Length: 343
Image (cartoon, rainbow, N blue to C red; front, top):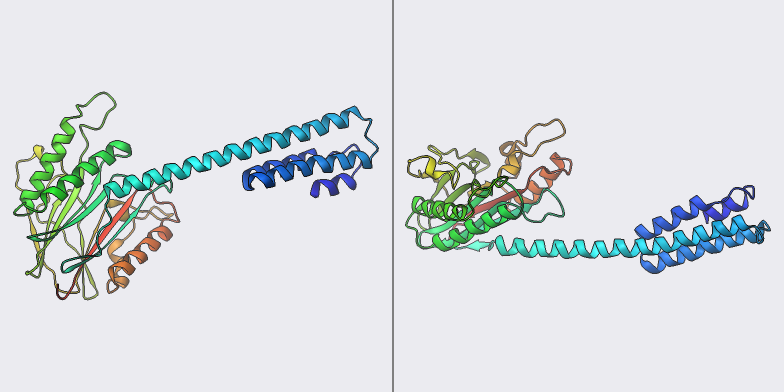
């Protein structure tokens, strides 16, 4: 329509080809196929009407320009089909990524015995639905055992390492007598995995390590046991207070345990009904605002400490996105465990 008006109210030697071309290309990018076709046909019709209006039916140049408009219309239809195919491929890729994430990161049950659980996973890129952050929870004869971890690096090798560690955790958590035994089994599994990929030039597989934190909430003791392997400390939410549970003697990340001979150390903390334990990956605390300041997790989460796990993570999700202005630099994972009054 704009092209028709420009053509009618300007001299005959001013042709609205640019406006018509812009309309057709825009339609190709924004509209479905049939509307793109109609836009192309309409553009050709408008140009022909202008030729009649200005008595240019015998003008060879005008016919050449009409052919140009028609060629752009055909190109717009081709572009529309190409973009639609790419959009379908992206949907398929994202669907596969979501399926892979569900295969690696099983959805946590909302209730495990005396513990209520909620989890959150945010990918740094909207198209990349899965990364190296991981978490798991299992109810065992020793209570509810939790794992959260972060694989060094990105891409398929990180996902494979995360899947290896989660598989080992789900298998070993049931019969390992305590957290140090469980940590040693995880260390053995991830070291064995890395040894099967000998280092080659430009490869990080053999050197890949995982920061991890294990937690155990016994059924009949009002405590939580934690074991840290180079991972950020969890937060304890108790009656409106937020406390960082720093490890007395943290161990190195998994697959680096051979560098030291120290035993794994367990920290014991009171954990009463209504208390909540927040486990998270460093993508949370390393989120930055526009000035480059890191996200102050303990400070920001304090006003929501009395919320249910689900609502607390919703607040945290929205706040992280707002704090980073919608541009997360790293994947983010978090798990909240709340002790209920009774089983």
